[in-house]
Amino acid sequence: MLVDWALVFAVTTLLLLPFLRPDETGVRLAGAPLTFTTCKNVTSLPQHLLDLVAPETVARATLCEVRPFGIYNGRDLTMVYALKETSSRSGDEDSIVSRTRTTSTSRILTVALGADDQVIQVITPQNVAIPLVLIILSAVFIARSGQTPGKRLAGLRVQGQGCAMCREVRRLGLFVLFGGISMASGLLSKDMITGAAQVPVWLVLIFGLVLFTAFVAVYIWPLIRWRGAMPYDRATGFEVVRAI
Image 1: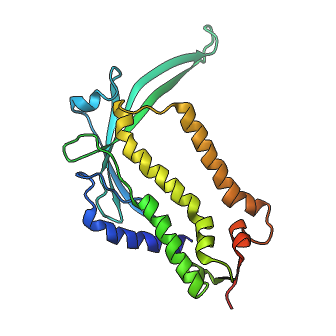
Image 2: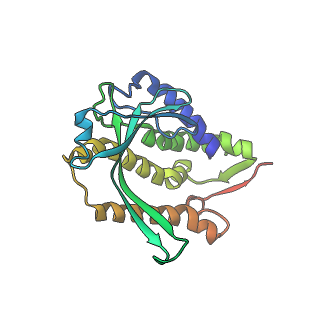
């Protein structure tokens, strides 16, 4: 699957390149298997960025430039603020040997910046496009030969008389949902940071737990309680065998 994913990433990247303007439109690449990141410390920030964490003060700030496969993919600013340090001393007052322990707590905020250092919304269409294209291409390959490039490389074959598209939708549909949620969170991130949109923490935690449970139920639990095939194969009349 990793080989197929990498090939689809390459295809969708080529299709997105004409529209890739991270600092202007916020459109970014996503899902890259290889990314280079260059970071530098920032000692002075404009007031509109300091206002994001006001009335707290920024203790440290780091500006990172992201380049998947060397392609410029925007800048992210990480601010560490509300830094508090507490010291505690162990040992008796009359003891010769004593130790002082310092504990630090802080909060972190990461924002995407445009060319004018304004906070921008991030759009990552590949989060949805990669699993969607993978579903379509995998179904075509399986229907024609029973092998995707990745399965051919691994010496495997999918055989059966069922609906190939139904199999791939069952197998990868959850990734389309994950990608849609990830892209939506990028679109809402600016409004959430500036306070224009508020999402309760308990709702985020419950939603994350539901998604994690769904992932375990679809991909992990069937491997633990193995029944000869994955559920999406059994439900659609397919099985994965060694290619002859």
